[in-house]
Image (cartoon, rainbow, N blue to C red):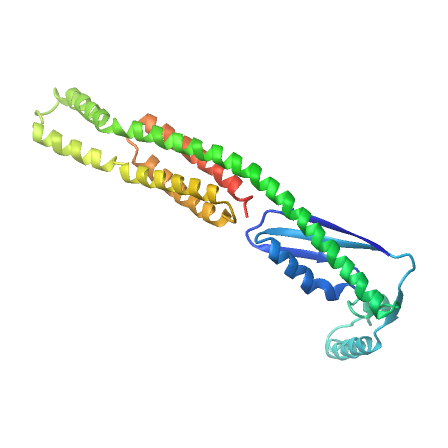
Length: 279
C-alpha cells in the first residue's frame, strides 16, 4: 500500500479543516485535526489522503445498521403513504449510506497500527512543509506591508502639512467673500469676522484625527516588527485607520487636504487587503 497527502491552504479568519479520508482511516481524524491546530491558527485547509492498495480491500455489509435503516424506512413509508405514494427504497441508495458498507482490514493488528503511524508521520511532514511555505509567504507579506505602512505614514505627514495652512486659507477665502459682499450689504465688524473665522477653523480642525492616525500607523509598525500571529490586530487597526481617514475627509476645508485624504483611504484599503492574508 502507498499513500499521498495533498494539502491546500487559503486565507480564512478562523482555522477550518476539510478532510477527505479513504475508508478505514476515519479513526485518525482527531489526531490529524489536533496536529494541524498545533501549527496553524487561521486559514481554510483542504487535505486529501489518497491510498493505493496493491490488493483490493475486503468489504462487508453492516447488517445491523442496514436492518435499522430498512425498519426506519418502512415506518416512514407507512406514515407518508397515507396521503401520497412513496416508492420503496432502492438497494443502491441504502448501500450508499455512510457506514453500511465497511472496509475489512485483513492485515494483523500490528501491521494496521504501523500503517496508521506512518500515515500520521506523513501528515506531520506535510504540515511542516505547509508551515514553511506559509512562513515564506509571511516574510514576503511583511516586506510588502512595511512598504505600504511607510506610504501611509508619508500621506499622513502630507496631510499634517496641508492641515497646518488650513486656518490661513480659510481666512483668505472668508476675506475674499466679504470683499465681494461689501458692496451689497453693510460692513461686517472685525469682531464678527473673527468669530466666524474661529468657528470655521474649529470645524475644520483635524489635529486629533491626525494624531490618532500617526499613533495607529506607529502601532502597525510595532506589530510588524513583533511578527507572530498579528493578522487580527492589524485588521482592527485598519478599521480604525479608515474611520479616522473618513473623518479627515469630511472635516477638510481644503481641496489639497481632501485629495490627500482620498489617497490615504485608498492606501489603507490596499494595506487591509494584504492584512487579510496574515495569520
